[in-house]
Image 1 (cartoon, helix red, strand yellow):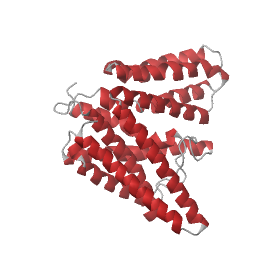
Image 2 (tube, rainbow, N blue to C red):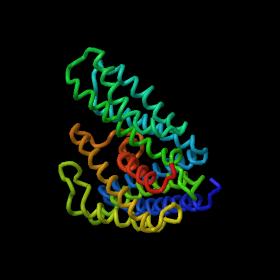
Image 3 (tube, rainbow, N blue to C red):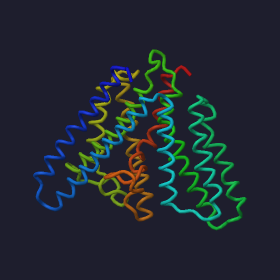
Image 4 (spheres, rainbow, N blue to C red):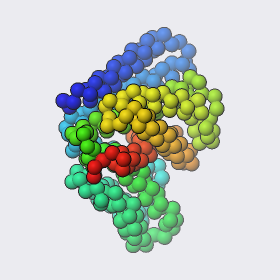
Length: 315
């Protein structure tokens, strides 16, 4: 937290939230039509939620590496709960679900805390993938067994395994010349993920005409995608000084983050549409559930982590 560049990034986020809050307040005072008032109310609720989320994230970084691990462990637990609540299982899965929530999820983040990259990278996709369905089969409930097992496995992969790669940026990367600054890199990654979501939303609202996949998410448009990606990449390249990357390298990584984030949002929207719901939950005012807020992060985090580890890390 004594890093001047990290403080500058945080100050920039606070400034953005202050400006957004002022705009929201002005809009609420000057909007008359009912339809527009509902839009403004939703915008202001989103801004209030962003203040809370930014404060929690900043506090987690202030407590050091362990704070980031604990925060994302809690986020993963909540996201997995939302995923498995929306995609219901049966009584025969209760023991497997107990293992998923109270054994597998904590262990995945404990592996981060003890800096065990080898086991961290294969624990869920190899050992859990094989052992958990064996545990479910032992319960003797064979009705829709494959479908039920796939839901649990998929929930663990997205909500726990993929999400855990975000705090892994802090604990598992050893970048020469960047020692002790990984919290700043995590902040940068999360900032790019969330800015991309916000800017795609803004460009989609203002310029959107052509949906990317109308049956999945009518509000996700080509104009929103292209405008949001270009704007986010330019911002990310401009913030290269906070990373171990050159401006061009930062831009390339931002392209990967934004496109994978958009794809993650599209995939998770497809699941919601299949079950006939708008949001994964109601935990975050204006945003829906925890999984609604981190769907893009879950898809982008593993790729960003492994690209940085392969090309920049010494371990």
